Amino acid sequence: MLLQKANGLSHPHFLNTADLTQEEIQALIALALDLKQGKVQKSLAGKTLATLFFNPSVRTRVSFATAMFKLGGQALEISSNNVWSFEYEDDVVMDGSTIEHVKEVAPVLSRYCDGLAIRCSELVTRSAESASTGSWAESKRDIVLNSFAKYAGVPVINMESNVYHPCQGLGDAVTIKEQLGETKGKKYVHSWAYHPKALPMATTNSQLLGACDLGMDVVLAHPQGWELDPEILALAQKRAIESGGSFSISYDQHEAVEDADIVCTKSWGALPYYGNWEAEKQARAQLKDWIIDEEKMARTRHGKFMHCLPVRRNVEVTQGVLDGTSSIVIDEAENRMWAQMALLATYLGD
Ligand code: CP
Image 1: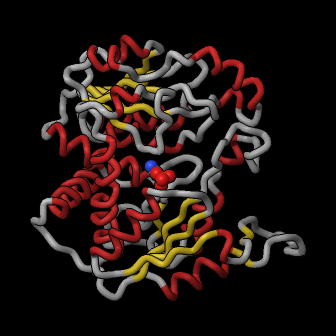
Image 2 (image 1 turned 90 degrees about the vertical axis):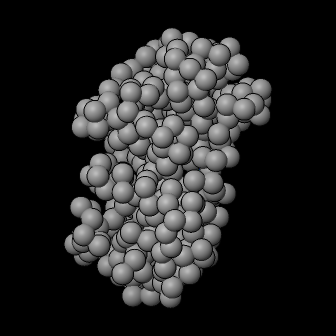
């Protein structure tokens, strides 16, 4: 790792919220809300953030560009279709399709830019035809993100990898704090939802960890077989205890949402079926009742509904819930920008 420290933070890069202490996370949340309310101003004048997108994006792309603009700096977008194809493995003979090694790319970009932000995630991780690895163990290496972090001389921000989407986790934590004020003792439910595709679990992992940092009673609800990676579950348990909250798992969506203050839903693929879409397709076809609807929201304690977006209407959540007064999905998307402004000011600021 070329970069040892970023402004005194406990980790030089923002790859996973759990790399930071809970005090550091609380400070980022407070700064995001202060920035949103106009209580403080931060400047990144003259600074450049390179945003490297290897996948499509609406919110992340626009919120990072706007965050840098509002801070007086600039975001320079790099897409996989307008740069050379990069190599990440060590000790390879590069006589194939890759043209440039990350060992040169990352330090070169670090000479031009003050931070690098990377989005590189398997889009449909368990579909053999669309996954490039077909193995969770291989995907979990997050080789693109971790290689940039290894060879960059400036902070690297994870804009969603195979394992984590920490900007979503932080943005959601800002939104929950904004909505509830005191979060300790409040109930947060993160529920799996039916979806016609097997989506990555990075967003869920980070949303879960974000809630566990808030001292909430966190319930993860999903069908049996859709368990998250054991390392994530252990981390969620640890962070929940450290924050004075709790963490439990439910296999019953109706039961889980009872008295919830926040209901957040997201679909993800089942690890046992990783790379075996045909088997997962049949199993998940039986789970179409895993949808957040008006009846489930009525069981909550006037709970708010969250989703990271993009969302499939009347598949993951009914349009009645999504268009109703309990839905805070637009605030949630907006707060990505304020959270990232806090992040950028903290990591890239003088
Ligand atoms: N929630 C989120 O990351 O949205 P995008 O994929 O559109 O950036």
